[in-house]
Image (cartoon, rainbow, N blue to C red):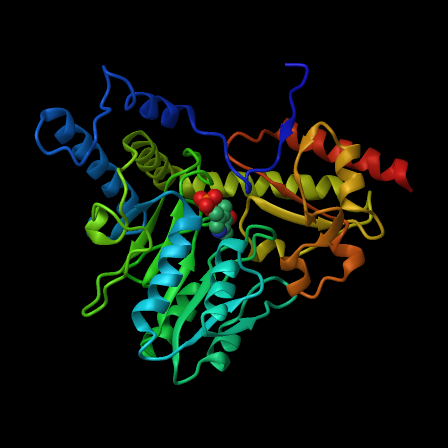
Length: 382
Ligand SMILES: *Cc1c(COP(=O)(O)O)cnc(C)c1O
C-alpha cells in the first residue's frame, strides 16, 4: 500500500470494473464458458456463441444499433484501420479525397498518412483554440470527389467534443461516408445511431472499465456498401474481420458497456464535480491555463498548461500522481503534443502541459491530495 499512487490517467486506460473482471474470469477455464464460439459441433461451442451474441446485444444497445452492425476487433486502433482503409478501398472508384483532422489519435492519423502514400489526397483540418473541429470547416473542405470524413467524437488529450450529430447531417446529404472514433466517448456521452448519421463508429472496452485488447466497429447497414476486410482468414464477423473470437474479452466488453449504459449520466455528473473541485483548488493559487473549454469537453479530462514549466520536470516532481504529460517523447528530444499544436497552443505552453483524467474510482480525497501536491510542487519551482 505504501507505493500506492493516485490514478488520474483514466483517458489512457481504466482499471477493469470488478463486476466485469468477474464475468471475464467465468469465460476462461474448463468449468467456465471457454470454447471457440465458431465450434458448431458441440454444446460448449454453442454456449460460447450465445455468450458472444449476448455481448453483441449489450454493445449494440449502448449505440442503439442492430446486432448485425457490430464487428468485434482487437480494439479501437484496429477498428479505425478497418474503417478507414476499408472505405478508401471500397470507394476509390468514386473519388480519392479524404478529410480528417490534425487532432486525431495516431491510430487515425497514421492510417491517413498511409493512404496518402498510396495516392489518396487528404485534407487535414485544424480544430479551433478550444479543440473542437467545427462543422463549417468540414463543410468547406468537401469536394466532388470526397469519399470519407473521419473525426473523433471526444479528443483523448483535451476532452474536446466535436458536434458529430451536426457534421453527420451535412455528410449524409452529400452521401459521404462518416467515420467516428468514439474510443473516448462510448459509455460517457449518448451515441444513438438512429439519430447520429455516422456509418462507422470505433469503440474499445479499456476506456470504459473493460479489458484491453478488445473493441468493436459499428458498421451501418446500407445498400450496396460492403466493408472489405483488412484481416483475412476464416471469414468470421460476416467476412469483415477474421480470427477466433476472444470469448472472455468480448463478454467483458459487453458487461462494461451494459454497466456504462445504466450509470452513464449520473457517473458523468459526479466526475464533472470532481474536475470542478480540482480546478477550484488551483484557481488563484497557481499560474495555469486550461487547454480546451471546461464546459464543452468531456467531464473526465482536464488538460492544463503551466507556462514556463516543463511537463517532464513536473511529472518527475510528482511521483505519487499517475498522470500524463501533454508531450510525446520521441527518442531523446521532447516534442509538444500534436493535438495542442493543432489548437494553436505555443511550444512554451504545450511543453508544460499535463493531462489529468478522472473516472469511476476517483474519490474527492484523491482530487484534494492531487491538487495539494501540484500546488506545492509549483510553489517550490517558482
Ligand atoms: C485509446 C484510443 C484509441 C486506441 O484504442 P485501442 O483500443 O487502445 O487500440 C483510439 N482513439 C482514441 C481517441 C483513443 O482514446
